[in-house]
View (cartoon, rainbow, N blue to C red):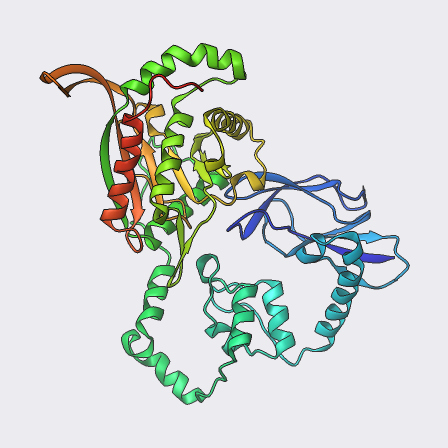
Length: 455
């Protein structure tokens, strides 16, 4: 018999951990390959995790409600392999390889596991509030990296966590030996923060310090409602975004009368031809995609001192759930779709989001986000950036208002369909000229909509 560790798989971009919500198998149950073994939840989506081996579940390493880091083992399955007493660790890289590649990769994993167990002269562990994944700790052990060296490695992951790429880059650039004696380190620790740490490190410390609100007392008759898991994660994500990105919001008003009249004229024929209900969202999204092509600087991410310009245009659409929570499914390569394609994608994502049927891939890879606050009758808003993006657009409600129209005979006042566009952007890399010009261009495309166009 051999024992196989079942690892928490990668669940999408920026997802670092998952909460076990329900075990589908009990200890002693037989588990088939690819059979659901546990149900999990992240701040992005709920999902099922299939088994990567066939055998009997002999141990649960975590119970329901436990938070498990991506790449960590959460269960052990005993298989019918002919290698007794061997514990095999299936890494994410092995799970993603082809069958022909999997065998040597698993053999290498066994060899590494044996070497790790026998080589304990270098101890690497999590210190303080900093988390190190099993993969990072394994690399550190194998390369003889001390805990002090590891603590000094700058992390590019969530909350400053050290990733595999960070530690490999550290090794490639040449390790920096810890030369400062203990007395010097102690003295530095006793100095004021402004003397003991560089400015960049001070900023990082301030950024990672948890934000504590004022104490709140409940009065007689007050109802106390505990936040559910998803609400807690949304709250953490929003606070993190405000701390990371200096938000600026620009507002533009757009006359969308031509769009409203055109949609009223063609919506029945559109649904009969395509089987899809035509809403304003895909029409507005079409204008957003065109504007992103004109101003690609808003389709980016910030990685330390680097600006990553995204080649793909993957538009996230903030969607309210029946529970009152929020999720952002992503329409991949939106710039390759016509209006019919965008309509089908918007309707499909919205329906599956509300039914709780989104997959991790559906909410990963977004490069820009649109939030339709007009759905709730709001005329404008100041949306919070969906990290690691640098901008987000809020679409206000379309309302009839008297407006001044310029004609060849002079200015006249007429009833028009008007709406506000609210564009929040990261002032670290998007200045007012870019952020304001982008949202103005979106409004221009909406106002120039051809009322005689076909689908």
